[in-house]
Image (cartoon, rainbow, N blue to C red; front, side, top):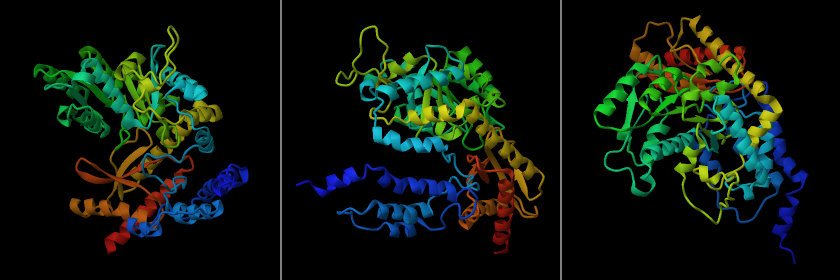
Length: 482
């Protein structure tokens, strides 16, 4: 007698079963198109937790019932990234072709660490990495790997840099006098996290001050000289293109020349900004990127891929191979004189999803030039928002946008003291988001709370950014009157 659960599994492989969930995806695309409805939820975590406070399900429900719960209990109060008024974090409303590829990746369930476990996807990853290193301007010696994101990519790059300066660190540790790493004051926290994880300690991080939110090359030069004078070896310099707070681009030509002169490994955190390579008009901001020895790049940011699709690119792929110099004969089977196809020897992860297929599919569907034009659209709308802010007296922009990120403040009539304005901006973001009219973020620049937007949605147009400013002003008026 066949167990009913086995029959249920076979039933669920039919297209009619999958249609229950596919319909939710199409419904989501459609319901967010016209910009109506709330962008996010007004409920608290505690209120949402009550909805899911239930015992472990012992018996199953129909897919129709499960789909209905997804609709009413999950989707109804999730952030609606495809809503054109979502202007929050660096999380994309993913390109549709990539969304439809996700179930195919899941059903094939290939593990790209080892070629024999993923014959086609592993080869595709090698090809896609070559496309990306070509964009950087590197030769055939370059390589890389997909990662879960920029944090893993930067960790892995610094692991390779550690191996280059302390070849025995894997077996003997880093010793009592570890090398130092230098980065700008607006670098992502992934840098300090990596130093802790690598056993160097966060005290081994030297932070370089900024000029206009970019690393100051003159200050970097002085810091490198001082580090050497104090007997400290320098493991790496980390530059940032597309910083999290302001989207600013460090001067890679100047920083690269300094690193070359001092013989120092240059890692570029391009998690957000490296996608400018796809733009005809904005790629110049990355001039000098070819000087780097390693580059972090998140297609799930500037290329609008679903999470998780990150990349680490290496100017010399052997640096990455040496960083993970371990033997695992039960997995990796090298043939003498043959190309090494297994990716697990170059990656922090072993079991790894074939996320490269999402990237390959969107490049096939939209083309690199098409994705570059989407990137330009997001940056153009951000520039228009900057112009709108500078034309008003009740807001001030903190910087001119270099990408699709902009920080600004609400000033009101301008007759309140600075502490009042700080408190108003701190509370304004929360009030505006609760209203459902839109969704933005908050950060701190030079000690003051500021409003921050990241335009990630191809549906967002200039009239939406005008509505953002009007909506913020209206919420601010309510806060002031209260």
